[in-house]
Amino acid sequence: MKSLRVMVVDDSAYNRRTLTELLEQIPGVVVAGKATDGDEALRMVQEVQPDLVTLDLEMPRMDGFTFLRLLMARRPTPVIVVSGYSNKENVFRALELGALDFVAKPTRTVTTDLHVIKEELAEKVAMVRQLTPSLGARRRVLTPVPPRALSALRPEPRTTTDRPRHVVVVGASTGGPTALVRLFRNIPQDIDATFLVAQHMPPRFTRTFAERLHRLGGVQVQEATGSHPLKRGEAWICPGGKCLEVGLDLQVVVKDTEPDDRYVPSVDRLFETAAKKLGEQCIGVVLTGMGDDGADGVLHIARRGGRVLAESPESAVIYGMPGAAERTGVVTAMLPLETLAERLVMWLR
Image 1 (tube, rainbow, N blue to C red):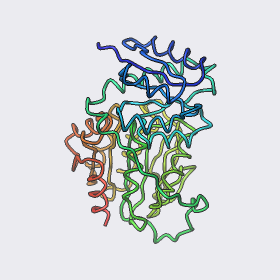
Image 2: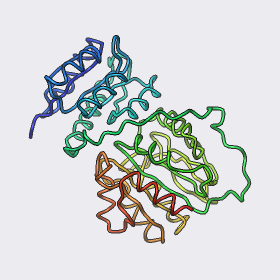
Image 3: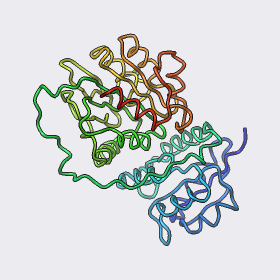
Image 4: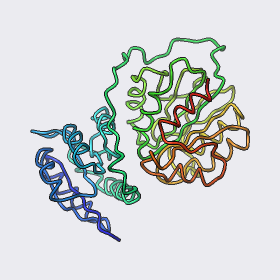
């Protein structure tokens, strides 16, 4: 197995040392360089030629955001952000600037629960090994979106006539936050559909992510809590650590995990319950991600007359989930993300 060369960028000497120790415990990983800020990291990149960069965002001289913009312009490289729970908004900003994924520090200085960080780092390393060689050339930096006021986060009360003609269930994992931003940017406000999203993401991050999607200005996006009626023009994000189901009376319901849930949130569970309750009204969308979550779910959708779209290798950061869906033989179309969004809107018109 070829060694994976990693560069650690963090202004804390303790963090650099700890992350280096954790990374070098992962078979096949070599920490090839360490930098104290973005300015030093940029100078080292050409010399070190890393396969992966772990990045702190809050640093002196040149912060992580400036480093990301310059790195993606000069030498696109997979970047994993290492950030605390208190900086959730910064994490999503970094993902939109081209970072691949993130690991949440248990504390500001990575002083406790190191085994959890090690497991997550090992997962991210395995993910990077699955990337296609052309990933760097395909990293997309998203242009800023004018914010919609947070006061508009709560939708206005609607009547039962707002029940949607279609319900779109979306599953995503690695690379999903950026893919979902690109997808929701293309969804018009007056669309006659409800969107239900299962994105593999830790607890405490999904509410901030929902607010970020909401500010794109299209459909009303919220993190799901309890149960909610399905209404057109709305989108519900499954909270981290929970699962979403479509229940009785066409309600979207937040559920606790179950022993047979292989992934959390479970795309399969969302897809299966939506298919059973909605039949041909249900449209499934499988976006980028590791593993095969959603493959069983798309079979349920197809068997009940629904349609399925999946992201093609041209745009998927990780082709695991879309590829598993494709192998079922029931995917209606495999499309690059922008074309997928256009097709979806066409179906919903």
